[in-house]
Amino acid sequence: MSAMPYVIVVYDVAPERGQRVLDYLRRYLTWVQNSALEGFLTEAQLAQVWQDLGGLIDVERDSVYLYELPSDRFLRRRVLGQLKGVQDNIL
Image 1 (tube, rainbow, N blue to C red):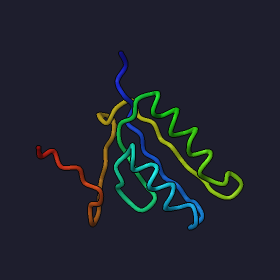
Image 2: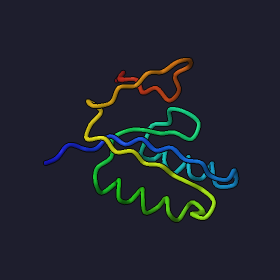
Image 3: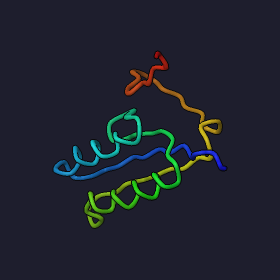
Image 4: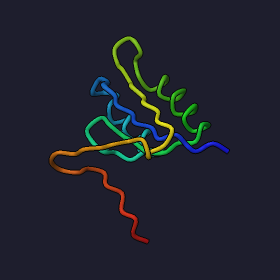
C-alpha cells in the first residue's frame, strides 16, 4: 500500500465562486492561507477533488494549482508572520 500524497492547492477564482471553492476544499484539506490549503488525500479523494473542482470553477476565467508530494516528509515549509489554519494534535 502506498503512502497518501501530501497535497497543496492554491486557487484564484472570481469572488462569486471563491467561498464555494473554499468550503468544498475545507472538507478535505486544512486552510493555511487565503486561497491555499494543504493536507493528505487518498488517491481516490485526490481524483474526486480534482473532478469536483472542475465543476465549481469557470475554467475560462479561474485557475486551480494542485501540487502533489509523495509525503510531507519532503516538504520544507517556512512561515513568516501569522500562522493560519494550524491543526493541533490535542485529543
